[in-house]
Image 1 (cartoon, rainbow, N blue to C red):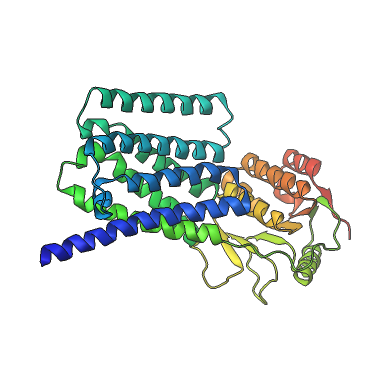
Image 2 (cartoon, rainbow, N blue to C red; image 1 turned 60 degrees about the vertical axis):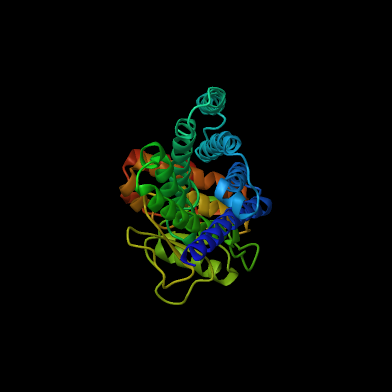
Length: 369
């Protein structure tokens, strides 16, 4: 009786594993269809291959009433691992803007040729399953770790439930990377259970990421000229924020949280403190996560927000160095101008050297009231 119950539980868990992989792929595909973000094309294909890999595992097939030949499944699983690893690697390279470079393309070619040749030769020479998987699974593990790290740094960040996807992928990658060493030890069953937990994390994170919504502005435009500007006096900044609040249009990047009424526009609070959970319209951003900050602003611009107010450039320059902070400012300006919006930097000339302020003034005009 106990053995039957144990087999039934294992069967249910295996089927749930397949369903969860399929839904994770489905959420990624849904996000791609809705946003048309090109990196999600590679990621959704990788997750589809991951779902197929689950369906080609002997225990799952037997639970479904199919009794395949193990010698056929092993090479198929190895090839799926290589293909999934290549797609995940392509996703990472795309997010890092290196997929179009010669090095990036050469890396994809080498892994595709080397991985497929390894599986072919290992199959033709009838090697053991352990040797057959000795390259594909660690390669897949490394690719999962890279995509997890890249998604956190370039796309998802670390401030929401969506972060569970890259964290789960990274930890799952660690398990796959240890495959040749741990598969024949007592740790194997425990690592399999940990892998199931990490896949739940990936499922929850991808669901949150796919369904994440940015609220469009209440009014499509605000009575402020288009372009890139700076303001020196606080009263001028207060006027701008009042206009943004009336229109429900704009993005504020600041070191100072609004301490009165809840603003009618999104606020990015730049701080080293843990994420703030008490304010639904406030998203905490670490000062060194300026790449993530640019992506978040871009997403709001795509939704129709037309004003970006940067009220902490000096702090970003302090944390990242002036050169890196200025590159961030240029990226911000380019996106705002591309979407026909307005960038306003609230700053004080006395905070910079003469050379630095000259560079700033080349990119920003003084906003006259």
